[in-house]
Image (cartoon, rainbow, N blue to C red):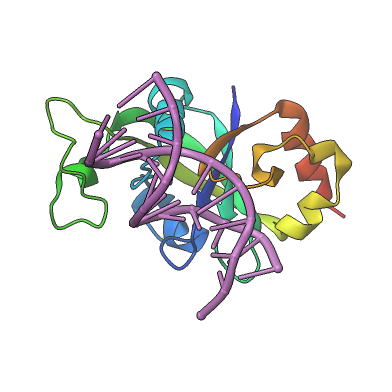
Length: 154
DNA sequence: GCCAACGTTGGC
DNA sequence: GCCAACGTTGGC
């Protein structure tokens, strides 16, 4: 089983939004970055866990945990001209973008902010903390995963 | 295939 | 709202 971190702007889609969906699960649409696409299409497996990260907000940070419940399949919002995520270069025959489904597991006991994460040398290699990082989906090592879960209890 | 221009991300 | 960093686009 692998661990991940998935970013979302809470103004667009927050962990509370996911929690409010039927079955507390939803598709993770709108990813339009090839590296992130490849991870969803090729690497994310049912049962994998991910941190839900709130980005581009007053207090960016990890707020909860979700589980992958469906593996990569074409992101149909790319085919919908009405969607903000429409991409005329994608087609049903040759889908360019993929998504996975995730299910809400729980909130962390407290949000762990970006500033706090940065204070931990142990986490310095996380792509999230590297300068200029723009990946919206990234792997988290098992060690990092458990380290962060310990922070939650402090 | 290079690279300048442009658009987007996302912290601050 | 600013702007650094980075990915993408498109002219050549």
